[in-house]
Every structure is written in C-alpha cells, then in structure tokens.
Amino acid sequence: MTTLVAVGAQWGDEGKGKLVDWLAPRAQYVVRFHGGNNAGHTLVVDGEQTVLHVVPAGVLNSSTVNLIGPGVVVDPGALLAELEALKQRGVLRDPSRVRLSGRAHVILSWHLALDMAREEAARDLAIGTTGRGIGPAYEDKVARRGIRVADLLDPAALRGAIDRLVKQKNFELVDYHQWQAVDADALYRQCVEWGRQLEPYVENTGHTLDRALREGKNVLFEGAQGTFLDIDHGTYPYVTSSNCVAGAVCAGAGIGPTRIDRVLGITKAYTTRVGGGPFPTEQTGVLGEKLREVGAEFGATTGRPRRCGWLDAVMLREAAMVNGFTGLAINKLDVLSGLDELRIATAYRVDGKLTHDFPMTLAEIERAEPIYESHPCWAEDITGCRQLEGLPEAARSYVKRVEALVGVPVEIISVGPGRDQTITCNDPFRSASE
Ligand code: GDP
Ligand code: IMO
Ligand code: MG
Image (cartoon, rainbow, N blue to C red; front, side, top):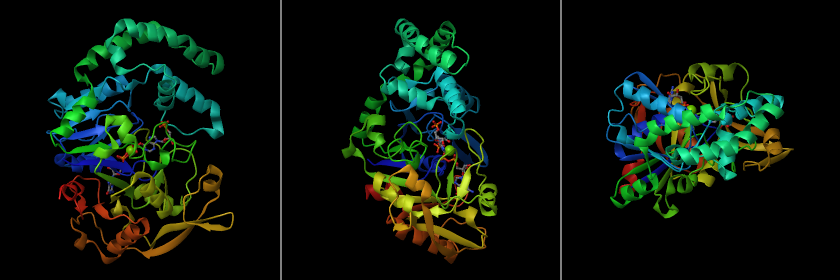
C-alpha cells in the first residue's frame, strides 16, 4: 500500500491534472479532498484534451475509482454536466467509478450570485475569483448553516434549510448589492432533481477509503489550486477559501496523518498566477507574453490570461516546508526552450534587507524584490525526450539547480501536455513500496 498526496507548489495550474492522470494506473483510488469547480485540470491523451473541474483526474484510467471527499464543495449542476460529458464520450461506462461524499457541501445559485456581486462591489480590491461560488459556499459550511449532498436526498430537510437561508441570502443580494433575488421554490425543485440524479453516486467515501487502505490499495490524493492559494499559508486575502496544502488531505478526505506515505510537490519550470495578488517574479513585458504564448497560459476554468514570470525558489522552499514534500515534479520544462537566458529567484530584498524566507505579510510580499541567478538555456526542442539523459546539458543542470535550491529530489519532469511526454527519475509509487 502506498498513499501519495500530489499538490501544487505555486498558485495553481502547475499541471496537477496531467500528472495525476499519468500516475493513476498505479493507484486504485484517486481522491479529491478540497476546493470545487474553481479547479480546471487538463489531461491530454492521444491528442484528445479533457478538462476536469470536480471529477478526479483518475477517471480516464478505466480501473481507477474516483472519490470526491467531504472537504470538496460541489456544484451539483456542474458535476452532473461533467459526468454526462464523460458518459457521452464513453469514458465513464461504469458510474460506480465516481463516488461522492454525502458530507460534501453544495454550491447553490446564491453562492454564485454572491461571489459575483461581491467581486463587482470590491472593484480595485477584487480577488479575481473564478466566480464559481467557492468562497460563499465555504463560508456557509464554517458558519454551520450549509447544505450538504446528503440533504439533497431528503426533501423535507432540504425544504426547511432553503427556507431558513433564503431570507438572509436575498437580503444581501437584493438590499445590499441590488442583485436579483433567488426564488426559493425554483431552487428547491432544482435541488430535489439534482438529489435524484446524484443519489447513485453518493456514499460515505471515508469508509470506502478506509477499506481501500486496509486492503493495501494504492491511493493518490489530487490537490487543487496550490500552496500560495491556501487560505492559511497563501498570499491572503488573494487566495481561495480552502486549505490546499498536503495536510488538508487528512480532514478533507478523512485519513489520519499516520497513513500518508509521500507528498509530491508539483511546480512549473517557471511561475504563473491567475487573478489578483502579489507575484514577486512576474514579468509583464515581452518575456511574460512569450511564456503565455508558448505555454498556452490561459485559465482552464475561466479562460483568463495567466500572469507569467520566472521560477521562484523562495516560494518553492516555503512550499516544501509547509507540505513536507518527499519529491518534486517539474512541469512545462519544454516551454523554456530557446530563451536567451533563464532566471531563478533565490532570495528577496524587502525594505533593503536580504531574506531567503517567504515573507509573512502581504505588504512585505508586495514589496519583495527578487534576487535572481542566471542560467544558460538550451535551444533544442525537448518535447520528444523521455529520459533524463536525453535532455540537453543545460536543461539537466537547470533541474539539478532547482533540486538543490529547494532541497527536494526531482522525481518527474514533464516536457509536454501529453500523457506520455513525461520523464520519470524516480516513480513515487514504486519508491515508496521498496
Ligand atoms: P492543473 O490545474 O494544475 O491541473 O493545470 P492546468 O491544466 O490548469 O494547466 C496546465 C496546462 O499546461 C494545461 O493546459 C496542460 O495541458 C499543460 N501542460 C501540462 N504539462 C505540460 C508540459 O510539460 N508542457 C506543456 N507545454 N504543457 C503542459
Ligand atoms: P487549479 O486546481 C489557478 C484563484 C482564482 C483567484 C483565487 C480565488 O486548476 O490549479 P476562487 O474562485 O477559488 O474563490 O478564487 O484563486 N484560483 C485558481 N488559480 N488554478 C486554480 O485551480 C484556481 N482556483 C482558484 O483565480 O485568484
Ligand atoms: Mg488549472
């Protein structure tokens, strides 16, 4: 048995979906444990692209069971649409390969409306959310008034919960934001219908997971977003509303910390961010545009252009510390091919003082000036490389340098979006079982 947690080391979109799909044949279970359909995880298999938002990225592997744990917030309409699209394509022939926790909280139309209304009202201070109602849904969960998936299967309880909540939601929407009111009757009917359609997928995923572990199965936990979007450890308030770090797997899936074997940190070979907030190594000029164009850096959920910049080893060291990485995956190395030089931030200067640690406050992160070291780049197209030895010398030395700066061994290198465009230095599942 091996349990592997795969999480983003930056601000999301590191290529988690690609790697989870690639690792999935070695795992019998893939588990989402936080976030919702703010995530957009892209898989490319035999040239065909699949973008997943809530369904775990093990779904293209026919022998993997995919669990959506209690820590996830689920928009039932979005989940059903995603499942339907997978069924239509013949990918999800056996619906029992997707299991949904009855304890997961649901995102309803008032959460979407509140997310958008608040962003609009915040103007210059807007977070730049994905507009999927994630923050308002987690707010209700923590305030102990949320509606959970299991409630959709209990019409009487559901009616009571919607009636209790609607006045307060419409008060904020209509009186405060001059937004349209939510119709409680229509929402109730919609929820009952969603409950009917979701019922075959619902179970206690915590028990399923426990059984899997006792049977000695390999389990892969799929992080969403990234370390610096984490509600506690990220660039608050420019973050998402869940814990994205590896530790969140325990509460969000229902697994004790003693049962986690390995943690794979996933990073791009450079850095991107979508939405507002500080980004010390951001490149707004020609280089930023080039990375965006070559790396096709447009959001998988909202289509927004991603902000691009150099790799930041200060951030990666912080991520390694907070998550306890046992290995690193470096994705999109191919995107750097042909640049004049490469840079890595190794430290920051904040108010004239040199620091090797990621600053504590937003104001300090905003004032941080990166200290760079320069690396030679390579001219060759590396998208066809499948072995470390096949990479140009400059690419290998860049990878080695990242490994040294972060203090974590590089286990996987990705050189293209395709499933097979992957170099394994050390298979995280195999090395754990040895
Ligand atoms: P996720 O949210 O972490 O799963 O990442 P996204 O899917 O949002 O964004 C990563 C993007 O990069 C997707 O379009 C992937 O198809 C693509 N991608 C992943 N790995 C590589 C790679 O090694 N090279 C290139 N060129 N593209 C990659
Ligand atoms: P994946 O899993 C990149 C960002 C949004 C915004 C902030 C808050 O594909 O890596 P939210 O809608 O969560 O309230 O938005 O978080 N964000 C992401 N950025 N990748 C994601 O997911 C993201 N999910 C949320 O852009 O800045
Ligand atoms: Mg993404």
